[in-house]
Amino acid sequence: MLSTIRADFRIIFERDPAARNLLEVLFCYPGLQALICHRLAHWLHNIGIPFIPRLISHIARFLTGIEIHPGATIGEGVFIDHGMGVVIGETAIIGDYTLIYQGVTLGGTGKESGKRHPTLGENVVVGAGAKVLGNIQIGNNVRIGAGSVVLRDVPSNCTVVGVPGRIVYRSGVRVEPLEHNNLPDSEAEVIRALVNRIEALEEQIQTLQHQQSTAKTPVLVSYVIKDGETVETAPICNLRDKVIQQFLDGAGI
Image (cartoon, rainbow, N blue to C red):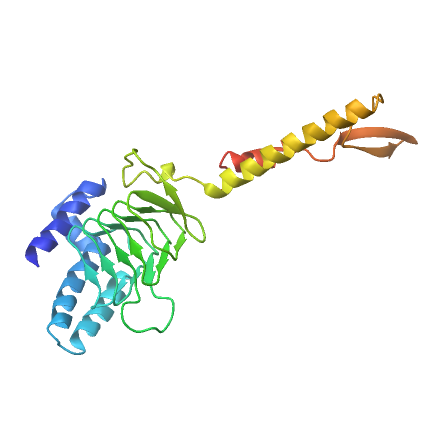
C-alpha cells in the first residue's frame, strides 16, 4: 500500500504544474486525500470488515467531494485532478496511471448484480464531466473527451467524444494527456460535410437552371417591395452565414 501511495504522490508532480511541494500536495489535493482514504477502506473491505470501510468512504466524500466505493479497484499512480463530483462505483476497476477530472462518473446502468461498472485500462484520460456507464471495457491509452457519455467498449489507443460517445482512432499519433485542445469535434465535422454537400447541390441546380433558361434572373433569390418597386434581396439560403461559419470554426462549441 505504501508503494502505491508513493506512486500517487509522484504522478501529481509529473502531471500538475501547480504542484509545488509535498506539504501542499498532501493537504490541498482532495484527489490524493480521497485515494489515501480509499486505499485503507479497500483493504478493510477485502479482509471482510463490515461497516467501517463504508464509513471511511462516506467521511472522505464529505471532506473531498469524491465518492469512491470501498469495493472499487484502483491501480497505482492514479491522479484525480480537482475531483469534485467524481463518483466511482463498487465494481469499477481503474488501471495504473489513469487521469480523472472533476465530475466524472464511473457508474452502472441499473440494478443488475455482479460486475456492473466499467473497467479502465492503463494511461486512460477521462475528461471533466464524462460518464462511463455499465460493465464495459476501456482499453489502454484511451482518451475520453469532456462531457462524453460512453456506453460501449472502447479499444486501446483511440479517443472517444460526444453523446453517446463515438470512437475516433488516432493511430500513429502520440497525444499528451493534458492536450485537451486536440480532441476532435465529430459533430462539427458532420455538419461541415452536410453544408458542403448542400452548397454543391445548390451549384448544380443553378447550373441546370441556367442551361434551361436564358433569363438573367438569378436563382434562389427573394424579393421585397420597397417604395412601390420590387427589389431583389440576398439569396434565401446563405450557408456562408457568419454564425454558421463561426460554429464550423469551433466558436462556442
